[in-house]
Image 1 (cartoon, rainbow, N blue to C red):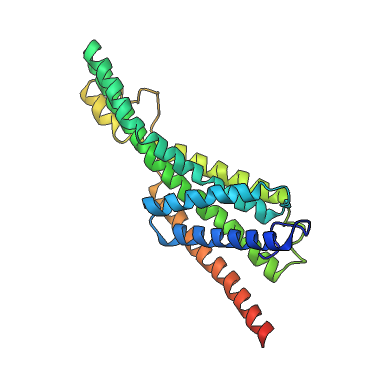
Image 2 (cartoon, rainbow, N blue to C red):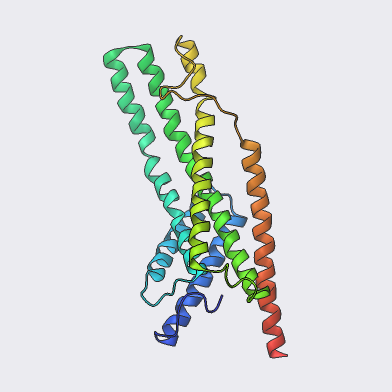
Length: 252
């Protein structure tokens, strides 16, 4: 972790301070993701502030393109989902007011049903964005813990796999999984509520966007997050314990 990001081209004092700050950022993300509820507002706000600072540091020209650098950058970018969540929250009442104005002019039952559906869609999207942020953070923290474990235990045997190319590929797979889970969960949850409105209005059981019911996956998502939580806890405990053991052996 000490030689994560920089070659020795800049001043040692600045690089040492930056490395220490990024280690603190990683520790902060571990604490906020593993110990706090994923919807807690204050930890999310603190995480966004520190992620912005981390992104500015990682864009420095002195930073090398190591795998951990790529993973740290993507971890900081996950907080963009939190910002999008906060931006969309005022949009739910706005959609409701716009649709209410439309319903008053048309006075149609179908328009009223669509108004309810759009309000539900925006509200659920806000919640699902926080779930997606939590899943992406768990996956990326797991990759960081795995990379640090490989470096500390099998540095030579895993050298060819610990490249920026594999790190970028892993991040792409993470975001693909997160987006698929977001769309699938949003699709499934929207179809559990709007059907009540549309059946009472004697309309089609499909939503206004023509969605088709799909099997929901709340059990799988919950099991995946718990497994990732345990894996992260074990990986990072092993990393910090091995570092502490090495520092003790150095002084003794």
